[in-house]
Structure formats: C-alpha cells, structure tokens
Length: 229
Image (cartoon, rainbow, N blue to C red; front, side):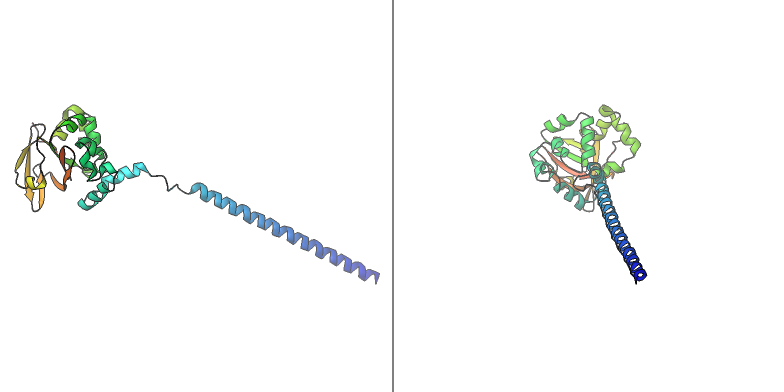
C-alpha cells in the first residue's frame, strides 16, 4: 500500500508539472501572437501612404494628358475660383492664365519672356493659348531652344499666338482668312468643317471664347511656329 501511494503521488506530480508547462506554453504563444500583430500593425502604419497629402508633381504632370475639349473644360472649371471660365473674366489675360490649370507651361514661357505686364496692360487682345497638352507634344529641342532665348525666339513664338487691338470670337474667326500677329507676322485662319484652323493648319481651336478682363482666349491643340524670316 505504501508503494502504491508513492507511485500515485509521483504520477500526480508529473501531471501537475505537465499542466504548468502547457499553461506557460499557451502564455508564450499568446504573447508571441500579440507581438506579431503589433509588428504587423506598426508595419502597416509605417508603410501606408498618406493619401491626404496631394502629389503636386503628379497633378502638374496630369495636365499634359488633358487634350480633348470636354476634358479641358472640366479641368478649367475644376480649377481655383480665379481659374474657372467665369472667374477668368475678372483678371487681365496673363493673370487669368496663371490660375488656369491647363496653361501652366504657357504661363511659365510668358513669364520667362517678360511679357506678363505687356499682356496685362493691353486694352484688347485675341490670344490663341496652347494647352499643356500642346506643349507636351512640342519637339523638346525646339522648346529648349525657345526657352534659352527668351527675348528672341521665345518672344517670336509667343507673339505668333497673340493678336493685338481686337477681341475676336470664334464667330469672327469663321469669317477671317488671315490676321496680323503681335510680332507683325501673318497668321492664316481657315474653317475645317466646324473647327477653326489657324497657322496654316498647324493648330485647331479646341475650346473657344474664354473671356478675360482684356482678352478673348481660344485654347489650341498645338504650339505654332512662326514662318522663318
């Protein structure tokens, strides 16, 4: 009986140790699982992009892909108050263009050429404004050459897009065959179906008759190059 009692006591001790070990193992697994979850949450928190911050460079690049008339109008209407089609009427043309989200490259070129005050102070202008999409399609070497010569080639190119002394509507352009530009060059105008074609077919008007305080602006799809000489 004494031997049996000792054996039973030993079995009981082994069972108790086993239960204690199992309990400790469960605690370790729970702790490990908690640590793993915390690490995962920390990784997700660290790696997740901040979607509340706008990517200004991406937004600027996107304007070069806005090319058709409906998308251009939508983009302009979606701009800041001063850049909407209605808001542009309050400012002179260079200022109005500076808040227009599809004319960022043109604004940079006008500023580089020192033409902001000239355009803003004019009494009446017709401006054929190449969009960012138009500038994106321009040969890079040509654009760089113009930007490198702001008072020469760049002024000649920009001036080829401006008619001084008149605010011509699309209806006016439909009955016109040629215009004299800001720099004195001749700008051919023609109707191609319902579309106004200018510069000897170099560009077409995609959004007509945008009004500013001192100009009528027509968005065009190509940067026009003036004739040599």
